[in-house]
Image (cartoon, rainbow, N blue to C red; front, side, top):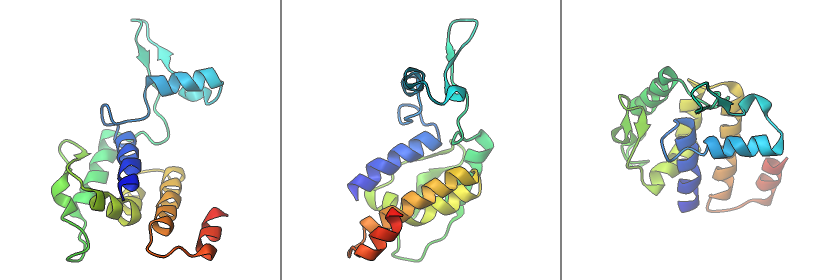
Length: 153
């Protein structure tokens, strides 16, 4: 569960563009320049000398962040399934806070794909859903070879 927490802390930090939590920063964009790929994401130098990062496909606007947080805030789950995740969501600040490992486990496997569908493009949501399905299969109590082979394809 702790691996899930670390992975999804990074994903949520990047999607919500949380300071010091996002993996989409100037250094990662300069790596793209060094590799010579994704030219549309290369940093641009402004007239005042500062760098500007063009938005990527997974960058959310303030409105999209509000929709995402509102969906998580308003979601209802059965008793005993998870803690009250709505208490860990701030729509005003557009962020998640104080989530435990089990909360991340429930969030990634079940809630994140639903919440992202309401505000992100199909390309992003399909990747997150695939990752969610992989985590469901790998983090289950029983690993079935057929299921792992199906996911691998």
